[in-house]
Length: 352
Image (cartoon, one colour):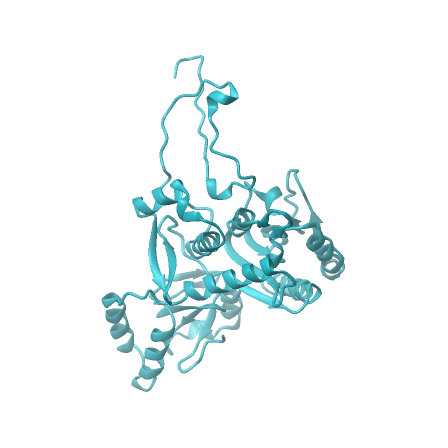
């Protein structure tokens, strides 16, 4: 550009298009803008498991295959269509960062959902050192936000934690504040830990299921994503959302329908590292869950080396050989739990 011109970079993600507007044409806005476009190859906001869940939920709640941007990502190999349990599933290749699998918690009533959330937050912040400022609660509608205020404010206040409802303004950076807001207000922001509340309420009269708003909510998490809602929603749209989210989480931890020779070789290696009496247990785990080898995990007290990780619908679990005494340390177990990892001992069955 010349000395009187300035560069401008514009990012556009049609999946986050909350209002259904078309791709902007600058000339229609009276702007003389010229340049070139490209497709970003990597994303660093969310972890791969979070991005994968968000994308597949969006795909099953909308007609994503008709979106030219989506087709372009598939063509470039950033998204890979596979089959999981006989159903279409998109594997995400544009997120290089791994992390814990998102989890879904269902309750009989909204009050039970919110109270359980409050107790979970208190445990994390008082026992595991999670900072309130690193947590954001996202709710789809005013009634869920009002219920959350009524239940969570006094519950958290007893422990010196403030809950602040914020909409359409700069978000506070106070250490002791948990933010409660809507996906529309939090678009463009992110948090280390995100709780999506009342997921069954992501629909509106006359508009149906708000798939894009739910996608925005699910992709605000940098490290951990927790989803909650009613186990028996009163509306058909709410039930469909619950069924889709639950199905995606189950499919994510299921192995691809295509046989993997690499997986077989990895299993043979692992069998050589554990006692023979536990071989059948390990083979059953490998049949039921995706199993991956992990590099070292850096913790406050030093690094630890799990032999493998499995991903279940209740989250990821790590296995350490019996010689790794570090993992027997209670503080290590608490820190791993804070990162979203459970720990398996030989013969343990993961919870369902």
